[in-house]
Image (cartoon, rainbow, N blue to C red; front, side, top):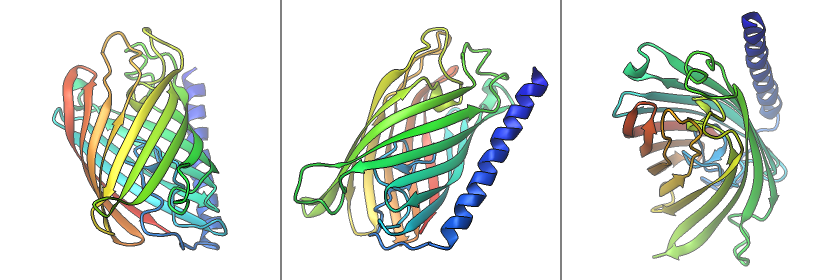
Length: 296
């Protein structure tokens, strides 16, 4: 059984690497980037275009409906209980319609399990259904997209299974609606986003999927609000509900306050205060995260 699990893990990881190389290789011949500054958002913790916590309906990169865009990111976060979260990945936006992302997340377990960490691989797909968040200013309709994130916990047997998690792999499904209102707040642009996510993930999937308390999909909402202070600065906040599936530890919702800076079109830096609530045996886990991104 151990050999089978290791083989599946290797196949999954190899598939992600090969897929990423193929996508980037194809994108290199068509890289463009004619959309406006920040219109792809930043890449959130699981690799989708959006805010730091939440997928938005925006397609990552700067490609128009006749171009292919791409993004790469890396994020580091640390809580007051010394949990460390890192996430990095790439995405390709095809003709401002389809987004495909590949990323890996890692959670360092502090002194809860000294010297141990949990890794998770995520393959994301997002499809814009209708609307344009920026250019459709003559209608109230937002940009709407649906998406899926296939998550595989590489270290499921070490901690998540012992805590009562039921599954090593999970699929999060979501629908997001995003709208930018030009000049809405004292002449500043206002971005609103709402996301509904069907998920079984425990702590985003770091602690597996499903549990002894609940093992069924739940619809969890998330919301984002951001104001463009200048053409290069975006100040916002997000709130994301999470399921509570494990009886051993109560899971709480997550929220952040972020400042994203776009010094030039192809580079963004994001700093945020992050509150994740309870993580395992530690309550009130909050801290700072920093994220850098390159987009074309």
